[in-house]
Image (cartoon, rainbow, N blue to C red; front, side, top):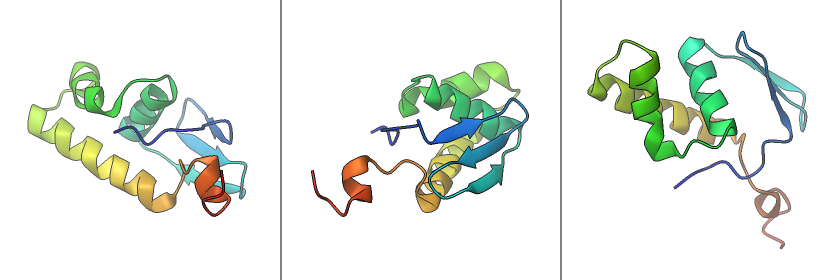
Length: 92
């Protein structure tokens, strides 16, 4: 399941600076996080992220799967990708 619904509120720089225009929050991502988030914004499904990470970085399958899982959990914790219905309290 992909968590990305709407990324118009996000701005990601090449050096890992992430800005959320909804609330003015800023985040600093490392190279791995920047790579993963860029792939997600570009439409890569979450189940393909470990393979993309393995191709781009010198990591094992287990490391890639763990890193992607932890990254997705952190993004969920930060609530960066709630869809508009959730933001409006479930009203559609």
